[in-house]
Figure 1 (cartoon, rainbow, N blue to C red):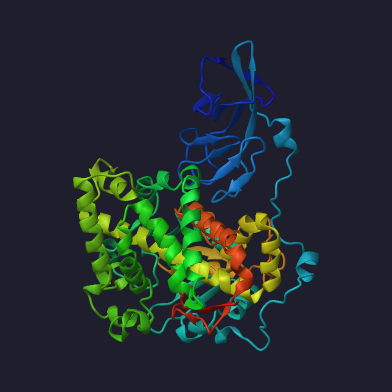
Figure 2 (cartoon, rainbow, N blue to C red; figure 1 turned 135 degrees about the horizontal axis):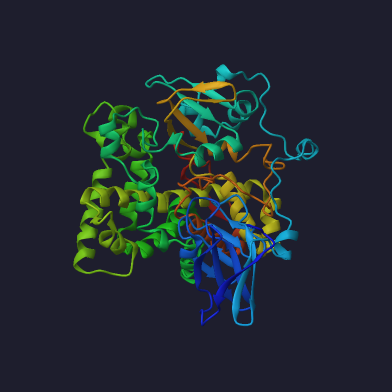
Length: 553
């Protein structure tokens, strides 16, 4: 097969605009589509995962993967939106005398495109950083205790993570009440572990750090606790409701909600930012997408707080903290070992029954009507799915908005820069998502022995990947500790870059943060802290419980 040869695919016919189809060109699967300015052709397999782009969408010059929502420029192959990292091979296509011809060589635009694929920050750029990283002088590896919740309640210990990246990129961390776990802190390693689900499984031991039996893992298994192909099948139940094209249709409604919520909050002299704004915006949006009664939003927020805040006695009560729950064999069978998960499961069960009787155009109806391998989700499976979507759809974006405002208040020059140029809201959203990662880490389990950085990970070992560290990797982000609302490129790890578990709601979350920033601009010079923010006591979730603010006259 010669890349220089043209292949005749037959008569053009009456192919409609934007339609995609797969063709076999000498054993290579090619996706072709008709755009207003001519034909496009490209590799039919997404570079993120084995997924056919011909099942996706062609939107102008952009093709959207149907599996995880990666976006590629069909003129150049550039990745416009993760989780894909590698460019898409683009081919030449043309119409000649009513016939469609394809050549497996890049057109001029793709051949000449300059891809932003700089693997690592040049040493000279790294040395020129304007904001120093955390002080690690005097620190030794024995000082690092990632399980010390007192520290995480006070701050994110970036000095520990910096030390680990530099001196122990694969670090063995003992546990007082567990068998210990491996810690990956460098960006490249986090991406590689995320991609290699065959070696680092989400399903074998679940995604939380607790040492659970296989029966306990199975009882509480949600979509995030599965590997492909099971994960791919479960994700397919709802992913079409979160594609970029669908999410864009929510923009006007999200803007109206954000505008109204901000106006109501700023009518007061002082208020709690978390309660009045950060928790309200994502939960209103999520309630509409899921078809939840909006008057129930405070209940759902409270239950989500208690489920994810299971290491904070102020949130769940001293009797319900995770260390005590793990002593109860019944609670170990529940998501997050939380008794409050039963309340959310029951809420979801009741809602599911209502949708079976009266279907609506919402995600909940889609879930109760969906079939996996020829059968509907059981009540138990639906309950676990409902908990995952409810907590992930609200808690993560809420904390990003709180931490994002805190970051803007700490960097008034960047807030002023955004206010002076609102077109920076998109890049500012990604910068806030990078710095205000709502999840510090996730757990995987090694399926086989593997040697990394000269150390042997044994089959069955717990492995953790730390987004809180990779997002500040000096080798991947120029001046990583500087807040830069115009930072580009910004391929942060916050949404789980590189693997099949790339956040289902990534496009929605980024749109919510971007719109919040745009609507927040008139208020940025009128708000200040009225007290010390109260952080969540957790080394898993990066959260703010309370943040008192004052409105300046």
